[in-house]
Image (tube, rainbow, N blue to C red):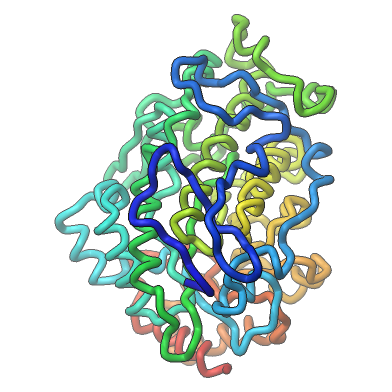
Length: 451
């Protein structure tokens, strides 16, 4: 799709290729040939070696901030074929593109019919079903992008942490991380276990391979969690109100110590072999480093399958103060985003309750910042110097409002964006169960009427 979309019938575990730009067309290349997940790292896999590998580098903000951003119009494939991708790159579009967080979910009868026969994890891990759910929601709503049906926590399993979903409680990690020994045992060489997500993307790409009736090519979105958010699940064992265990281990990592590391080739291997306690400074850097490694590989698989954009979800990062975000989350998140951009696709970075963090989140040099509904779009975009595209940001509960109220709120967001290039209409978080499908369709119709 998008020019010459290439999607193989299957991804071989020994060949992780990604689509990159060459003269405006997609070609296949090794996504790790031109970069390492972190500077100075040997990316070769030896499953018999220590799971941390031989190059566990501490990455600081200073090491990542100097990299050239890849959020330029010629950096992403297929921009000319998709208004969604063009908007991600702050290019002119005929109208504001629209899609919805959790657009395939429990509010939709078609999805609930599938859930009668399959658990959430069964849907995620069965490419045919995950693709069906993705395609059905996209076509039912008539949106401009399809986001693959998956779950943020899927990478935990190949890393060695089992989890499940408990009724009325959400995800639950069976053995939360509490010790350095557990961190050292986490695997980074089994991301091929996640190829079912890429195979689902391939099916979605094949289904939407032709331009639609309006001439636009549907955008395909892959996604992964951000390092802090996944770490919080791994440490807390599930969702949390205060993130006490996560912050205790985070604060013990002494960021000033990491800033003294001399260059990206300085490794933590000597620390990993020592007998350090769970509160030692090695805990957080090693965990962040492992997550960046796994998530980079996971994103590369999705791009190889045909994803045009990767969204990085930092669902719980709003629990951090600006100082804590700067000291403990900015560097690994920046590394992840730069690694994904090096694959030739734009990155959307989204968190909830992040109004105070947005200037720091912008330092990752993501292509698009997702805004939640608590954030005034016009003022926030202006404060960011319009140097990044923005996505959002209707309150999801507005979809329960009377039609005239909903129409007014959508119009207010469009007025705030003022047709400036780089706005993608979305909610400020995901569609919630019980949302009237007709209300979602009303928003799409209103957006399309702005052509």
